[in-house]
Image (cartoon, rainbow, N blue to C red; front, side):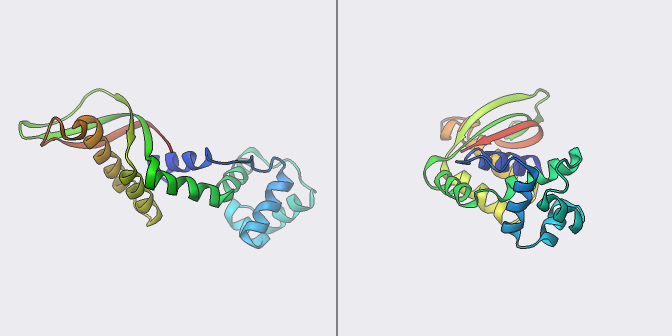
Length: 184
């Protein structure tokens, strides 16, 4: 999973209307109901089926830290899919997304090209069209490079070209991401 995939996943989790289950037993119970079997939960979390059954019965209550983190990630990935879908749909049709990033940008223009040597910190609201393209590409299994290209194009048009008011022939690349956060 790339930087932008992770940022979109975190943004989707911010739309939750209720907190996910807290105890290991409740989390494993939720995953078992959602995925349909203890075997599927075991495959998702990366433990044995018997371990899942022990967590489900309450025989084991404190998994090791790495397994607890994988259980938490699996629960968050499957928690409230309709709420997340509704938030994405709203962003793709009306609200757009806000991208906050600190990254290096590369520029191509008629005068030449450059990889800007410093990190830029930007917070830019991208219109719904870019949000829709980004969600569609992620759903279709696009790689990190394609997602970066969509974000770079949005930043290019909205921030660097200022909606067509300057820098007509400028092309922007998102080269090196220090961090990226998305909200919708």
